Image (cartoon, rainbow over all chains, first blue to last red; front, top):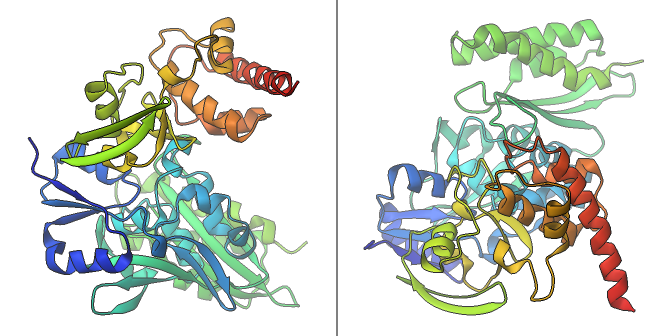
Length: 284
Length: 162
């Protein structure tokens, strides 16, 4: 007989109060699609399962002026069908399209994907490309954590056992080009080997005025690629230039990850994926 | 133990269950409904697909306690006393089944799809059943079965309005 206790708080305050006293002994569960796999493989070394999947405070996708917020408890299916995200955060919406399977998208949450801190969490590169900050709360305070700081290493987030991810605040950039693509072993239900999201804006002369790149799965934690962003900003995109920037991106990836046995494949694949994503932006 | 109240295949249930079991264990072991299969147990194969509040989910990835207050449909609840559900009828007719192990899951994914989208195209069918592995049929007959089930559902719907 198990002595694990299941707790479903009625509101965020109750959840945070509980974690303040029992955080160290608690595993938080939302959609459960990662937690249940862990429980199956290694059991649960905690006393409590705290179910935050029904907390209203973690729901909803809203646009308020310059702030686009996505609740941590929003499911991947909800992200994919959101009109607001279609217009204001297309890379995030696209990351939900190829995320696992329909059955998983129906319950898996964006907060869970981020908190689990898998290097191949598909929503993370998209959140990086959209300049996202996460609102994190404990009983005493709330604070904003940038997506770059969220994962400290593979499968390790910076969240303390007393904290809950409440929502993500994205920068709605206005008009621009956004995309997310990934490479896996097959098209559906495949863990990403390489995932990439970009947001690009051009000025009147066709020069890149703003660029953000989020790279995932091929680095220990997903990251922004600032050197490549700086390299392309102010330039007019040509095929040759994207190829060169893709090479720089692949080189930076190897610098971060190290030259593993898969590098011989991943280096050109990163370059090629960057080409594929940005090619529609070449001035014609 | 956790107390849960929910509906499964139209029947109200009030149960006390262990806190850390999956919805799949609840359905198969505690309720004895063996139609839902366990394949991989980690959300890769879709054999354990059930419908919760009308949406397809992997019952191996859901905590049983999270079923509290929900409406659950398993493969046993698809048919009525008088007839099979359109998906069942058409899978039978078109040999959408070979060894049968994936079938309950594929049926539940297809059933949820048709409830949400009565006239899916092939891409939408593919997207809906991409999380269900079938190593026998090669999927071709499954596509035919779902397409025909969609047609039958529409006809039945129209008939029902008469």
